[in-house]
Length: 368
Image 1: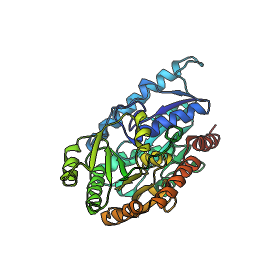
Image 2: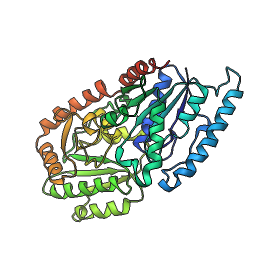
Image 3: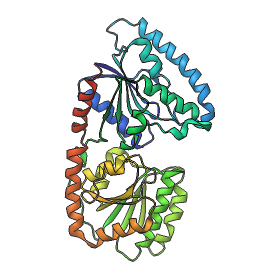
Image 4: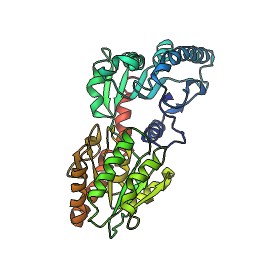
């Protein structure tokens, strides 16, 4: 099957590292793994970045003209032209970056319309977010199949689907193979966090992380932070008190994704407060590498970290609880080893892309 892959939020080849980029890349790999030809025509591209709500009306008008051009070009192509497609597949659709194109084009061309990872929240129906929210509703109403990645999106999406449309759970996934290497056993243990350094939720997570680490000053540990962004200076200032008597918290900056497996393998424990986290691809990477996870219990995190099996989940935003869980694993190397072995198994059994490929193949058969 020829599948047009549309990624309104972030293209698979974006230079900006993020979980959204990695999921887009992963879906492209899955589609190809299943034997489909993936098409990413320039006409289906959208401007980078998340637009302000005030721009949504202009974006909708522009998208209608863009859709008309795409429809006209498709109809003019010969049957076996490489740009023709049999199915429209959109990854990520939510009120800040909805899919303006998919519903229009798929209806006009009579091809199935599939969305992976859509979210719908009634509270967005009023105020400046209403235009993007309505666009999400139109997309859901047009969809033949919605692949729900985050469990907390199930109910909101289900209420907007038309009769006969399908909703299927697709577990978050990674290729676990690059992460399967012998993990370190450091003394003192190395605590690792991987996250973009930007405002809002990420910065809030770093604030909780700094507070938790300050509560652990009496313990022996080192911490490594991987990531970069506009909030880096503020995050460095948050961590500065921990480095007064020597560097305990190191900053590695932005790291190419291919180099991450070696960094995970060099650590002992993965730590992230997960403020308003959807699910977190880094949690899967850490567990695949055999790192126990300590994280805030929020959003879809419990769907990717098995509490008490592959890691420990604590009340979100509670720095003291996060610190207590980390202290427990610092003090008990045997428990750390048990969780590490279970984390590697858990990621391989439940979140490897081979598992996701089977789920995706089954779901796509519903709309062919």
